[in-house]
Length: 208
Image (cartoon, rainbow, N blue to C red):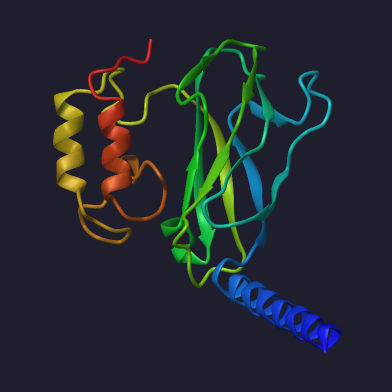
């Protein structure tokens, strides 16, 4: 009788654990994803600080809701003038993936001298409320820029003229008459709060 009770209890625990694991797998599914790496100008991305292995894509591995993961790469300015390094996520697949994934990096608008190598950590924060996304992809554009994001009139200073131009393009989408690609800092085809955040961070800043 005692052995029967022990067996029944063990069976019950096993069933409960199985139910919990199945439930958790539906609510918190891990997923795999890869980002293509694109470069603009003379900015080149490498896996190693000796700059021998170029980066063409980044695999984020297995991610779970609520997790933040960073990947270390090395960026070298192989041009002939100092530039401002900028990273931009683009071409999200599916389109709604960017609603649940926050892309960031550790040295926004960092100045890079000619032949200088900078250690950069692109990161992804996965929303704990992510739904309907089992896998995704997006491009990361590494760009050496002459002007700060927000310097829409290209005068080297993010100020009133830029605010006026940004205001005219506010809440417009690609294809709208007042849409201005120079105001779409995250390249998502919609000038909205993410772009305002970038503009605000660079307000009253000079590039050099």
